[in-house]
Amino acid sequence: MTEFKPMNPLEMVAYVLSKQINDHEVVYIGTGLPMVAGILAKKTHAPNITFVYESGGQDPIEGGMPWSVGGPETYRKSPMILEMPYSFGQAASGLVDTGFLGFAQLDMYGNANTTMIGGEFTNPKVRLTGSGGNNDVASLCDKLVFVGLQSPQKFVQKCDFITSAGHLTGGNARQEAGLLGHGPVAVVTSAGVYDFEPASNE
Amino acid sequence: MMSKFQFEYNQEALKNLKIEDTSILDRLVDYRHARDFRQKKDHSQRDKRMSLKEAVAEFVQDGDIFAYTGFGYVRTSIQADWEMVRQGKKNLQSIGSPNTCQSWGVTYGNTPYTHASYAGAEMRGYDKYFSDNIKNGRVKILSDWSHGLMAIGLKAAQLGAPGIFSKSGLGSDLVTHNPYLKVMNNPMAKGNDPCVFVPALYPDITFIHVHAADKFGNARFYGPAVNDLALAGATRKLVITAEEIVSNQDIRWNNKGVQITFQNVDAVVEQPYGALPGYMPGCYYWARRWWEKTFAMMSLGQEAMEAYIKEWILDTKDTNEVVKKLGGVDFIINQKRLAKAAEADNEDDGVEFKYKPWSPETPPDVYD
Image (cartoon, rainbow over all chains, first blue to last red; front, side, top):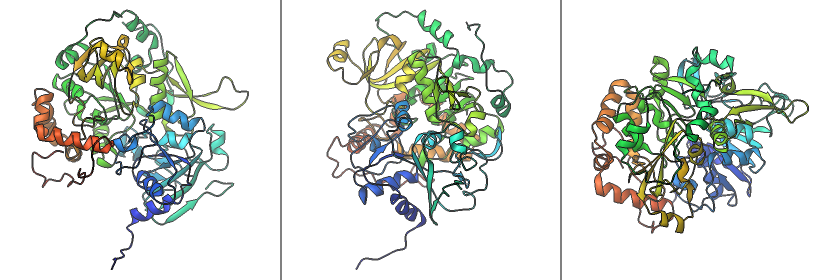
């Protein structure tokens, strides 16, 4: 007899996130939980999605779980392996549908922080990883879905540092700043899925 | 000799980063100097082979802007980086996307300056040492980048363009924490169309690890190029480290995958296992537990890192000793099997990827 166990929060996030991915789309995958969710989606309800990774790998055949967006699972028998500038260029020029990103802090307008917590830039409370590809995926993809565990530390009124622009200050702020694309359309957490108000973009 | 060209920096960023003397920033964007430097070089097809020791001694100068290639731990010339540390090169500015390897160059003062993009190794480790070193002043951030913005800057240099307008970075705090970036209106647009102008970026010295190169420097490699195509065109000095040296005939007859041309190259080094402890496409898998232990040491701080870097870099004579320390022939055979299985290039039925992640209980000689 099969034993049923309740999902742990990470599994819940990965499952809910996989529902944000539509089949046949080109999906830009950021490091961390987005990788897990993307692979889960491809194995279940969206077997025809194409993955794009910033190191240059894209459209790999099925394999093990990658731990790096530059690892062999990202370019496993890829028809063609690109380079970083071109990979982001694809997103900028309309060849990518949705980007999936993690974050350390996220504010109510979907601006993300992966750079630093507290203090000032030359003396932060904690210096995090830095942007990596986070800013580019957020700035350039047509639609963006953030994914992370629900906690008061991660969901803040205002980010200590805006690594990646979401809807900035809401309303038309993103367009006025010159950014293209719709920006964040959903935030997936272990508590559920958030979307953004159509007018205020909160 | 520097060109007499002067540069307009983002003043708000200079304030936020507490940079007073901007002369330290100039050479990264001095495209005229970079052009003159390479114009004066001998462009002939000649035998450029030398050892890794010789290449690092001759081509890395104190204060150079040192580029990290590949993807930090995927086809990255880590053994060249270790030789740089071994030879005690100082005051280097590191640049790379990601910039993972910069952090252990801080321990003995090799890379105290960084053009930051991404520290750590994704799910395998968070770099607490980088965070501590920002706070204690052992590392100074000269500019903060996204991978895409840095990639565009390097690509501009490869293309010989003084800069490229990008749509990355707008509205973020990156454009107020990077002296090289400015928000400017698209000159072709009537009305509001903000862009980020990214100047062409010129590192001083770059080591690119490839699968095969001939003695002139023509190089072929497989796997994600990341920024290496751009870097080969951007860097003032380029050293190719190759798993093997092949004949010029071989390069011509098997020219699929040749991506670096000889004119860009200053030296060619035969360096098998040059990407260890990182991954080399088709050749060897990461030394997973070495990376996990490294991030554990980083969490423990300066004293732990001094001992660890001494053990792995200062006290190993060369790459051959590093290979022995990682597990020798058994390690190499196993890592090759894993890499080929990961890339669907062998019989993977029976290849085991499961392992027990590093912990203080891990036996002292287990790094795979």
